[in-house]
Image (cartoon, rainbow, N blue to C red; front, side, top):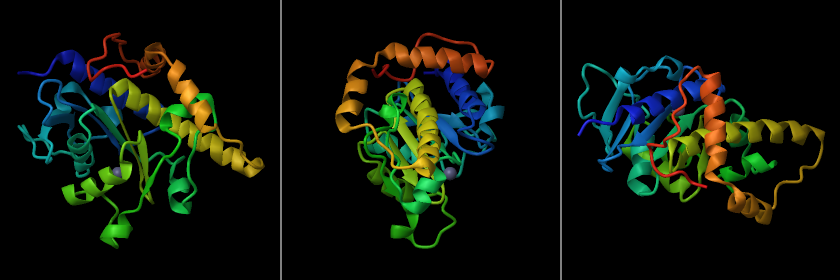
Length: 247
Ligand SMILES: [Zn+2]
């Protein structure tokens, strides 16, 4: 069954938003689980997110094999996505990025934790994965399913995981959710770094994080998505295609 054009359009939009908001540059990627084939996912050929068009989108098995290359080459790090879809059935979208704001936390092993209400959905704990712990000296790229599965274990049930000397991964129920959490993970990292230079930080408590999430409506994602679509010069489509709207 061909993929709905709206789902593909939304994935193009997600890539453009992540680029516009500075979460990704020439590198980094977003994917969705295939809407009707949960054993597959969809992501662009290896191309900068800002440049992605609908014809760049390819289907992959969870093992990372392209279903039909059409002469295109996938991202070397696509296995990050497959390993997470394989491990977590409720995940319908994944973003991998190298946001400069998050790198200092991974390389100093300083935990990134919510410092403002909008960032509560990054989770009370953002775990850290260090490829060297298991794989020794590598080029740090996650280019095999073995490495990607190890990363997926570190992510666990969390919304995000940091990668030492590399970047981060955000996983969730919908593209709107993972784009939201990618942008607010970046913002939280910026704010936390700035605050650390001023003095002792008062983080959100676990109770405050729970309270924010309990009262957050699906409309929060929609309002943000419409705003980011406008900034990225992309049409706004109210209908979420890639999974349910998580509150
Ligand atoms: Zn990477």
